[in-house]
Image (cartoon, rainbow, N blue to C red; front, side):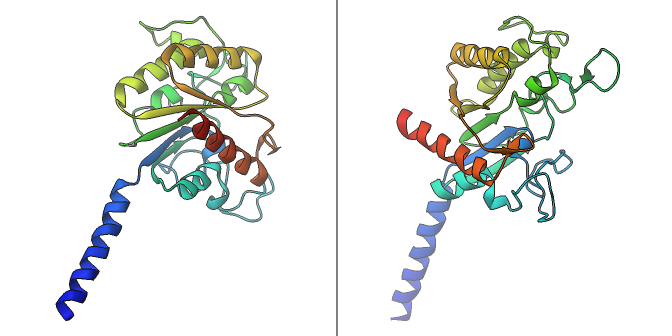
Length: 234
Protein backbone atom coordinates (compact mmCIF):
# COMPACT_ATOMS: atom_id res chain seq x y z
CA UNK A 1 0.00 0.00 0.00
CA UNK A 2 2.82 2.42 0.91
CA UNK A 3 4.53 1.70 -2.39
CA UNK A 4 1.27 2.36 -4.25
CA UNK A 5 0.79 5.70 -2.49
CA UNK A 6 4.40 6.65 -3.22
CA UNK A 7 3.95 5.84 -6.90
CA UNK A 8 0.78 7.94 -7.03
CA UNK A 9 2.52 10.90 -5.41
CA UNK A 10 5.49 10.64 -7.78
CA UNK A 11 3.11 10.41 -10.73
CA UNK A 12 1.21 13.51 -9.64
CA UNK A 13 4.44 15.46 -9.17
CA UNK A 14 5.53 14.35 -12.62
CA UNK A 15 2.28 15.63 -14.11
CA UNK A 16 2.64 19.01 -12.38
CA UNK A 17 6.26 19.31 -13.53
CA UNK A 18 5.36 18.41 -17.12
CA UNK A 19 2.55 20.95 -17.11
CA UNK A 20 4.88 23.67 -15.86
CA UNK A 21 7.49 22.77 -18.47
CA UNK A 22 4.87 22.78 -21.23
CA UNK A 23 3.62 26.28 -20.32
CA UNK A 24 4.75 28.77 -22.92
CA UNK A 25 6.80 31.73 -21.73
CA UNK A 26 6.38 35.40 -22.61
CA UNK A 27 8.92 38.21 -22.78
CA UNK A 28 8.11 41.90 -23.08
CA UNK A 29 10.07 44.66 -24.76
CA UNK A 30 8.41 47.86 -23.66
CA UNK A 31 8.36 51.34 -22.20
CA UNK A 32 6.66 52.78 -19.11
CA UNK A 33 3.33 51.11 -19.95
CA UNK A 34 4.84 47.69 -19.19
CA UNK A 35 7.03 48.52 -16.20
CA UNK A 36 6.51 47.57 -12.57
CA UNK A 37 8.93 47.94 -9.69
CA UNK A 38 10.79 44.73 -8.91
CA UNK A 39 9.76 42.87 -12.08
CA UNK A 40 12.19 44.24 -14.68
CA UNK A 41 15.39 42.83 -16.11
CA UNK A 42 17.72 44.56 -15.74
CA UNK A 43 16.49 46.10 -12.51
CA UNK A 44 18.25 49.37 -13.34
CA UNK A 45 15.60 50.20 -15.97
CA UNK A 46 13.53 53.30 -15.21
CA UNK A 47 10.08 52.55 -13.73
CA UNK A 48 6.69 54.25 -13.96
CA UNK A 49 4.50 51.86 -11.97
CA UNK A 50 5.60 51.38 -8.37
CA UNK A 51 4.57 49.11 -5.54
CA UNK A 52 3.38 52.15 -3.60
CA UNK A 53 -0.27 52.83 -2.79
CA UNK A 54 0.53 56.51 -2.22
CA UNK A 55 1.81 57.12 -5.74
CA UNK A 56 -0.41 59.83 -7.20
CA UNK A 57 0.41 59.45 -10.88
CA UNK A 58 -1.69 56.28 -11.25
CA UNK A 59 -4.21 54.01 -9.58
CA UNK A 60 -2.16 50.91 -10.55
CA UNK A 61 -0.45 49.82 -7.33
CA UNK A 62 -0.04 46.06 -7.68
CA UNK A 63 1.74 43.98 -10.30
CA UNK A 64 -1.38 41.87 -10.70
CA UNK A 65 -3.08 44.94 -12.17
CA UNK A 66 -0.63 45.28 -15.07
CA UNK A 67 -1.80 44.19 -18.52
CA UNK A 68 0.97 41.62 -18.93
CA UNK A 69 0.52 39.96 -15.53
CA UNK A 70 -3.23 39.66 -16.15
CA UNK A 71 -2.66 38.13 -19.57
CA UNK A 72 -0.03 35.66 -18.35
CA UNK A 73 -2.08 34.61 -15.32
CA UNK A 74 -5.38 34.22 -17.17
CA UNK A 75 -3.95 32.27 -20.08
CA UNK A 76 -1.55 29.91 -18.35
CA UNK A 77 1.74 31.38 -19.56
CA UNK A 78 5.01 32.03 -17.72
CA UNK A 79 6.97 35.27 -17.58
CA UNK A 80 10.42 34.93 -19.11
CA UNK A 81 11.83 38.50 -19.10
CA UNK A 82 10.20 41.91 -18.90
CA UNK A 83 12.73 44.34 -20.38
CA UNK A 84 10.70 47.53 -20.23
CA UNK A 85 12.22 50.97 -19.68
CA UNK A 86 10.13 54.02 -18.79
CA UNK A 87 10.54 56.83 -21.30
CA UNK A 88 12.34 54.71 -23.88
CA UNK A 89 11.98 55.23 -27.60
CA UNK A 90 12.28 52.73 -30.43
CA UNK A 91 14.79 54.95 -32.21
CA UNK A 92 17.87 56.63 -30.74
CA UNK A 93 16.21 60.07 -30.50
CA UNK A 94 14.75 60.84 -27.08
CA UNK A 95 13.17 63.83 -25.43
CA UNK A 96 14.80 67.22 -25.93
CA UNK A 97 16.23 68.78 -22.79
CA UNK A 98 17.78 72.02 -23.99
CA UNK A 99 18.54 73.37 -27.42
CA UNK A 100 17.31 72.06 -30.79
CA UNK A 101 18.87 68.61 -30.62
CA UNK A 102 17.26 65.39 -29.46
CA UNK A 103 18.77 63.58 -26.49
CA UNK A 104 20.71 60.47 -27.44
CA UNK A 105 18.64 57.55 -26.10
CA UNK A 106 20.73 54.84 -27.72
CA UNK A 107 21.47 53.37 -24.27
CA UNK A 108 17.77 52.56 -23.70
CA UNK A 109 16.30 52.39 -27.21
CA UNK A 110 14.30 49.33 -28.24
CA UNK A 111 16.84 48.55 -30.96
CA UNK A 112 19.53 48.39 -28.26
CA UNK A 113 17.58 46.12 -25.89
CA UNK A 114 16.04 43.70 -28.41
CA UNK A 115 18.55 40.89 -27.80
CA UNK A 116 18.07 40.85 -24.03
CA UNK A 117 14.76 38.98 -23.79
CA UNK A 118 15.90 35.48 -22.87
CA UNK A 119 14.43 32.44 -24.62
CA UNK A 120 10.66 33.01 -24.76
CA UNK A 121 7.96 31.41 -26.90
CA UNK A 122 6.12 34.70 -27.39
CA UNK A 123 7.30 38.33 -27.40
CA UNK A 124 5.14 41.40 -26.97
CA UNK A 125 6.73 44.60 -28.27
CA UNK A 126 4.87 47.60 -26.87
CA UNK A 127 6.49 50.81 -28.07
CA UNK A 128 6.28 53.92 -30.20
CA UNK A 129 4.54 56.03 -27.56
CA UNK A 130 7.63 57.97 -26.53
CA UNK A 131 8.76 58.36 -30.14
CA UNK A 132 5.40 60.03 -30.71
CA UNK A 133 5.46 62.17 -27.58
CA UNK A 134 9.10 63.22 -28.02
CA UNK A 135 8.51 64.21 -31.63
CA UNK A 136 11.31 61.94 -32.79
CA UNK A 137 12.26 62.30 -36.48
CA UNK A 138 10.24 60.00 -38.73
CA UNK A 139 12.79 59.46 -41.50
CA UNK A 140 12.31 57.33 -44.62
CA UNK A 141 11.41 53.67 -44.94
CA UNK A 142 14.63 51.67 -45.08
CA UNK A 143 14.75 47.89 -44.79
CA UNK A 144 18.48 47.13 -44.83
CA UNK A 145 21.94 48.64 -44.54
CA UNK A 146 21.12 50.80 -41.52
CA UNK A 147 23.78 53.17 -40.22
CA UNK A 148 23.95 54.54 -36.70
CA UNK A 149 22.70 57.86 -38.07
CA UNK A 150 19.68 56.10 -39.62
CA UNK A 151 18.66 54.76 -36.21
CA UNK A 152 18.01 58.26 -34.89
CA UNK A 153 14.84 58.25 -37.04
CA UNK A 154 11.74 56.20 -36.32
CA UNK A 155 11.10 54.37 -39.60
CA UNK A 156 14.60 52.96 -40.09
CA UNK A 157 14.82 52.06 -36.38
CA UNK A 158 11.44 50.34 -36.41
CA UNK A 159 12.42 48.28 -39.45
CA UNK A 160 15.79 47.42 -37.93
CA UNK A 161 14.07 46.38 -34.70
CA UNK A 162 11.70 43.92 -36.36
CA UNK A 163 14.25 42.43 -38.75
CA UNK A 164 16.80 41.84 -36.01
CA UNK A 165 14.15 40.38 -33.69
CA UNK A 166 12.96 37.96 -36.37
CA UNK A 167 16.56 36.84 -36.91
CA UNK A 168 17.44 36.70 -33.22
CA UNK A 169 14.30 34.80 -32.16
CA UNK A 170 13.50 32.17 -34.81
CA UNK A 171 10.23 30.31 -34.24
CA UNK A 172 9.18 32.86 -31.60
CA UNK A 173 5.81 34.54 -32.11
CA UNK A 174 6.13 38.32 -32.08
CA UNK A 175 3.24 40.71 -31.50
CA UNK A 176 3.53 44.48 -31.76
CA UNK A 177 1.14 46.48 -29.57
CA UNK A 178 0.26 49.90 -30.97
CA UNK A 179 -0.98 52.49 -28.50
CA UNK A 180 -3.91 54.75 -29.38
CA UNK A 181 -3.76 58.56 -29.72
CA UNK A 182 -0.31 58.66 -31.31
CA UNK A 183 0.92 60.85 -34.17
CA UNK A 184 -0.47 59.82 -37.55
CA UNK A 185 3.07 59.35 -38.89
CA UNK A 186 3.85 56.87 -36.11
CA UNK A 187 0.63 54.91 -36.70
CA UNK A 188 1.20 54.77 -40.46
CA UNK A 189 4.83 53.76 -40.06
CA UNK A 190 4.13 50.97 -37.57
CA UNK A 191 1.37 49.52 -39.76
CA UNK A 192 3.51 49.65 -42.91
CA UNK A 193 6.60 48.12 -41.32
CA UNK A 194 4.70 45.40 -39.44
CA UNK A 195 3.00 44.48 -42.71
CA UNK A 196 6.36 44.36 -44.50
CA UNK A 197 7.73 41.88 -41.96
CA UNK A 198 4.43 40.05 -41.48
CA UNK A 199 4.48 40.75 -37.75
CA UNK A 200 1.10 40.63 -36.02
CA UNK A 201 -0.07 44.13 -35.09
CA UNK A 202 -2.56 44.64 -32.27
CA UNK A 203 -4.04 48.14 -32.49
CA UNK A 204 -5.35 49.28 -29.12
CA UNK A 205 -8.42 51.51 -28.95
CA UNK A 206 -10.00 53.76 -26.31
CA UNK A 207 -7.61 52.81 -23.51
CA UNK A 208 -8.45 54.57 -20.24
CA UNK A 209 -5.45 56.51 -18.90
CA UNK A 210 -4.31 58.64 -16.01
CA UNK A 211 -1.50 61.10 -16.76
CA UNK A 212 -1.17 59.53 -20.19
CA UNK A 213 -0.64 56.01 -18.81
CA UNK A 214 -3.04 53.07 -18.52
CA UNK A 215 -5.13 53.04 -15.34
CA UNK A 216 -6.40 49.88 -13.70
CA UNK A 217 -9.28 49.98 -16.16
CA UNK A 218 -6.89 50.67 -19.05
CA UNK A 219 -4.66 47.75 -18.11
CA UNK A 220 -7.68 45.45 -18.13
CA UNK A 221 -8.72 46.81 -21.53
CA UNK A 222 -5.26 46.12 -22.97
CA UNK A 223 -5.35 42.54 -21.71
CA UNK A 224 -8.85 42.03 -23.12
CA UNK A 225 -7.96 43.48 -26.52
CA UNK A 226 -4.88 41.25 -26.79
CA UNK A 227 -7.00 38.22 -25.91
CA UNK A 228 -9.65 39.21 -28.45
CA UNK A 229 -7.07 39.63 -31.22
CA UNK A 230 -5.35 36.32 -30.55
CA UNK A 231 -8.65 34.51 -30.25
CA UNK A 232 -9.81 35.89 -33.61
CA UNK A 233 -6.57 35.39 -35.51
CA UNK A 234 -5.18 32.06 -34.27
